[in-house]
Length: 151
Image (cartoon, rainbow, N blue to C red; front, side, top):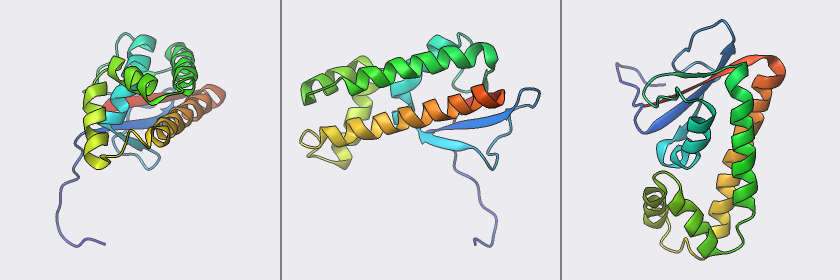
């Protein structure tokens, strides 16, 4: 426990929050999930293609009309990343993504040996995608809204 005043540092994060369809976005709700911005950027096109009103800096609502297109985009992303069979194809895939070069810079900074361990990173990205798919499926089956907001 921290005794004293402090600020919550919401920088370079993307928040994912689920509400009932008639509820507004609630910042940092108890069920919110967060993802580092460099990882989210790899998925950015999925969110943009499925909702033309996507705005990184404002809460974007994925309701019934937008959630199914998002699910389809995420499934396509998953299929594409799982098909990558070499470090070169993985690198090419990332370079084609929004801010993919910056993602690679982060990875290289954290793991200078990342090219040897590229399958680990492919799997971690796949895991994120599968968690997104589960989250979106939950929204579909429970008639919920997914909110996305960057900080």
